[in-house]
Length: 143
Image (cartoon, rainbow, N blue to C red; front, top):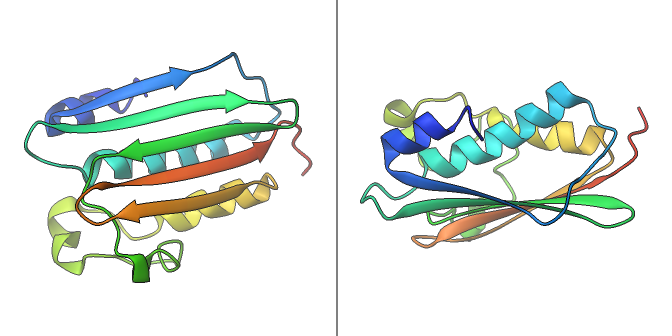
């Protein structure tokens, strides 16, 4: 979050972290960091540009799983694209590709990292209102 704050500031997007309790989990730190960074960076990049944008990241856990939620007030993802966003090189809006940048690999890498941890990721979105990614990862990592 600290690393992404300057990007959020530049985009005039408020970045908020809510942690409901301390969470300790056995994870591949590099892969999980990359997955979380991709989700938060996308939420910032594909957000509103009127200074009213926000991204909320929440972390929680029970006795078995850690739960990460990344919600944004961004441009949203059309329903017919939700199943395709994890495909390598898939871009929802090709017209924004050049100005926003990226390769179309971020969500594929994110999903693979989460699945490698025996976790799950789900996306919900409304075009023009925002997107929510829900991630669930077991607290104990089995390679």
